[in-house]
Amino acid sequence: MPELPHVTAILKDAGLIDTDWFKSYDLERGSAVHKAAEYLDHGDLDWDSVDPAILGRLRSYQRFLDEVRPEILSIEEKVVNGAMQYCGTLDRRVRINGREGVLDIKGPSRAAWQAVQVAMYAACFPQPLARWTLHLADERYNLVEHRSRLDWEAGKACITLARWRHEHGE
Picture 1 (cartoon, one colour):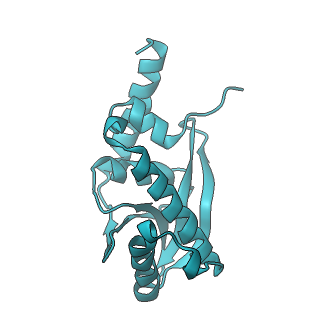
Picture 2 (spheres, helix red, strand yellow):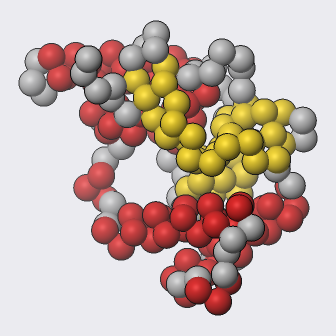
């Protein structure tokens, strides 16, 4: 059985994510923030070991945890949508104010495709889930809830377009 395409690859193949703008430094910093946040969530973070390049964003994540007080249900959870034939790894499944949902950790910049990404993760579950992106900057965080039903419609269109492009060698 062939390996299922990942959410991010689908969005890239459909043309929503342009990786030409991503610099290796930004990707490495994002990975370091994700890993440090995971240690923080598990209560295993040694703050003295945190790279100064990510310290501000990690402090913003700590502020989010302290102020919003999410219940973290899973970290880096692998998910599959069998019906639509894709998979992914969501950053967090959380409960905020009694509502279960998916949360994706991002840098400070917002992009429309991010709402589609979390909609695709949420569609891997049998029950409806809330969808959030958490944008971390050095001095603040911004929790954005995505509510548009069009996000999932766009996700399905991306799946179809990515498949079409692969079938036609695009």
